[in-house]
Each structure stands twice: as C-alpha cells, then as structure tokens.
Length: 450
Ligand SMILES: Cc1ncc(COP(=O)(O)O)c(C=O)c1O
Image 1 (cartoon, rainbow, N blue to C red):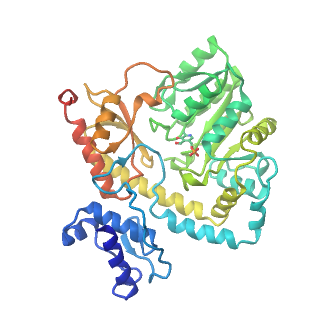
Image 2 (cartoon, rainbow, N blue to C red):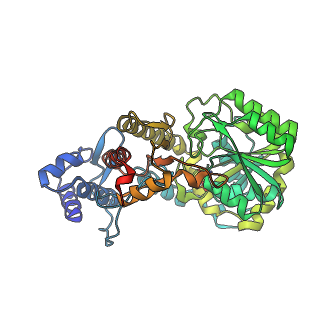
Image 3 (cartoon, helix red, strand yellow):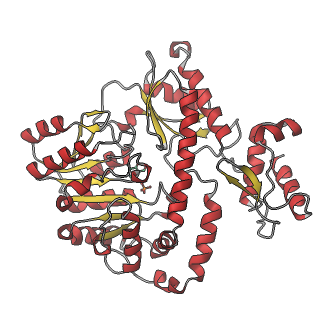
C-alpha cells in the first residue's frame, strides 16, 4: 500500500499535477482520505523521501522537492522502516533526527567527489590525521574552544574510539578511573575492557559532586576522571561554570587527568559556559565527535590534547586502527569548511526543542529531567515500578527504551529511572504515539501484568 502511494506521488510529480514546493497533506489528513493508518502514509512519505521526490522540513511539513529528475528506483526491500504503528519504535539510541540528512549529505558527497583536494583522502594519512582534516576539526572545536590549534587535534573514528584511545594511552591496567555514578555505558565497557578500576562519583542536578570527589581523592589516587559536563548521558545534567572550576581545581590538587567528553556540547543552553577542559587545559583531553551533531555513520571524532600528551594519543590511534578513514575525515572536513555543520546543528536544535515541547506536554505531572535542546530525557518512574520491569513491558508494547540500571557505573542498588530518546522517531506524530503509549503504561499498575 505504501509503495503504491509513493508511486502515485511520483506519477503526479512527473506529470506536473504536483509541482516543486507544493505542500503535501499531513499524515492524518491523507490517512483519513485514503482510509489507511497514518503509519502507512508515514511509510509512503519516507519512501518518496528516499526517492528524492519530497522533503520534510521542520515546521513546514512535507513538500515536493523536484520534478522527479533525481528519482531513485523503488525500494525492493520490504524491511521494516521503524515507522508503522505496529513496528517497534526505538527510543533507545541517542542519534540526530535524520529526515533531512540524506538530502544534505548527498550534496556533500557529490561536492567531495568533485573537489580538487579529493586525492588527499585516498592515501595513508600522517600521525593525528591529515593537517587539512585536523584544521577542519579545529574549526569545529572552536565553537567550544575558541583558540583551538590544528596541531593539537587528533582525528579518531568517533567518540567511542576517542574514549578507548585516551583511556588506554593515558592510564594503566589497574589504575583507578572515575566517572559519574550514572554514566554512558560506553565508558563502563571501555574501562572494564582495559581492566581499569572504575568508580562512580555521586551526583546532583549539575553532575558530579565536588565534595564527594574530594573525599575519594583523600583516600585513593585516581589517574583519570571521565566527565560529560553538558547534557550528560543519561541524566541530561548541565554543570555550571562554578562547578566546572571546582572539579578542575581538584584535578590540579590531586594530579589526575580529565577526559572531557563534550559530545553534546552543541546542545548547550548557555554557550558562554566553557567546556570543563578549558578550566584545566594542561591536564585535560577534550573529546567529541560528529555523530550526534551531523550523523553517526561518519565515524569522525576529535581529541584535543595539551602538546605534552599528544604523541601518546596519536600513537594509540596508530596501534588501534592505523588511522581513521581519511575518506570520511575528508567528507567531515567538507561539511565543516562549507558551513553545512552550522546549518545541520540549527536543524537539530530546532527539532530537539520541538520534541521537548511534545514530551513536556505528554509527561506533564511525571518526574523527569531534561534540557531545552537535549535529545533525551531521564524519567523517574512512580512506585512500585522498577526500571527493568518497565523496560520489558514497554518493549512488549512496541517501544524500546533503556533501563536506568544500564547506566550505573557500579552495579547494584535500586533503579526506577529510564532514558527516553526523542529524536529517532521519524515524525512528531510517531513520537507522540510512542510517548503516549509509555505514559499510559506508567499510569498503570505493574502488579497487574503477568
Ligand atoms: C557521552 C557519550 N560519549 C561517547 C559516545 C559515542 O559516540 P560515537 O558514536 O561518536 O562513538 C556516546 C554515544 O551515545 C555518548 O553518549
């Protein structure tokens, strides 16, 4: 059915019934007219989008993109698109809203292939990456670190690789590594894979508590603190400037390295707050990637290091992957130097704010933490729910979320929180549908389910 609708759209565009810029009916309007579900229309519009016939734009709906000159062949796969209301809706992975991405990245790929400096992306790259790619990285980092120099940039294959590289290069097996008590599971897996002793520091609404950190440092000697100070994963906490300065002062006093994971820095509410690493630049490594701001498939990340730690990091990149692919680094560089990065960040922030408004409306009366531009929210379930129990039942009801237990740096203890990601549903309708399902589940009594 959805393919027939997409085919009908293609015919109308080719025959001139529909013209460039024409706005298509909303999912609900067309679903009512054709007597099908909004999920079917959503699939049809996605298929038309995939064929480059239509384009979705924040606040404008779906509109005709061209006269069909760029039409791609019909999809011959019946693979589920995570769109229909009978499919699983995935609110478990933090990723950017992707509807407009294909359009922009298709253009960037063509631009890259035509550019005169394309040849440099086809060869081995020197330590740290090709200087031009590192300079583009420095340009991206200057949003957070205005004085960033390309010589201190190390290209990685995404932020997860950056975490692995920095922790393995700058600490030793058996070392004590600190993180937030609730933290991104990728930090937990890297620390344990490398046989570091991982300890979670208690947190409040701003992130880790300086007093708790100090108390631990008086008893033991940490080698590194890994910290996500902006839109923390999973609590969405943003650390104030004063707290950042306190943590940095403790790093100086007790001589440990800060690994400042700022992958969500572009979602800050107050961009004048400096990254944590800027408060102790000589003992901090700044870490980010383009996965959340541009697209996860790029696998391009950047470490920004004080000169004295640089060779340990570049050498660990060599040991781990020889070099991140210069081809994707070239594409990332084109996106950055042509200013497409700012446009995509604007699209993501607008989309996140709109989705936050939907979540606030549906979850009014529930207890949750988030930020105006955060991709995710951290929801506390009422008694007597447990996080694991809720996650299982949400899945049985067609919605994937992550249980709070997955984020506990140290295992054990009670958990009644779940992390919900707002950006993966392809439309606001789909998001509403998923959140409404979750809200009605939360309102029910878990003891009724068997
Ligand atoms: C805090 C944090 N750091 C690092 C990563 C890994 O990002 P990448 O996809 O660039 O490897 C994630 C992904 O969710 C994350 O939330």
